[in-house]
Length: 152
Image (cartoon, rainbow, N blue to C red; front, top):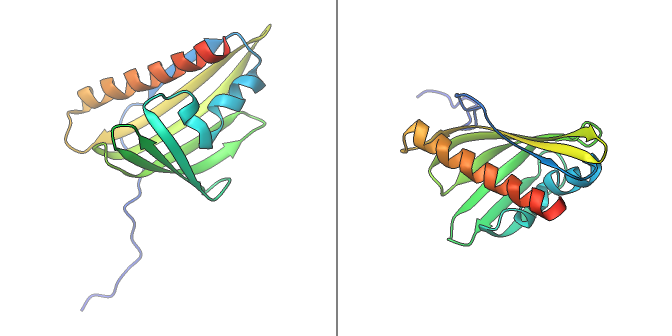
C-alpha cells in the first residue's frame, strides 16, 4: 500500500491576465475603501445577494452568494493597504470555474482622480477559454463601471 503524501487541489491558473480598469473622480483612499473591501464586493456587484466572511485578514474566506443561487468561496492571499492592492484565489464555486486568481489595486492619478485595476486569470471547467474570458471581462468591466457611478 502506498503511503499518503501531502497534496492539494489549489494551484494557480494558466492563461493570460484579463484586466478591467476604471478611472474615478475621487481620491485613491476613497476608491480603495470600496474596491479594497474584500468583505463587501456586493456593494458594486448587483448579482450578489450577500457575502459571508470566515476569519479576517490574509487567509480569510469570502463566500459570495448570487441571486441566481450560485456561490463562490475565495481566500484572501495578500493585502497591502499602504500600496492599495490585494490578491485572492477561488477555492470552490458553482459557476464552472476550474481555477481563478484575481488582484485588485488602486492608483492615485492626482488632482482628485484615481484608477482601480482588477486583474483576473482563470480556467473554465467546460466552457471554451475564449468564451469564458469574454464573460469574465464583461463581468469585471460592469462591476467597475458600477464603482465609477457610485463614486464619480
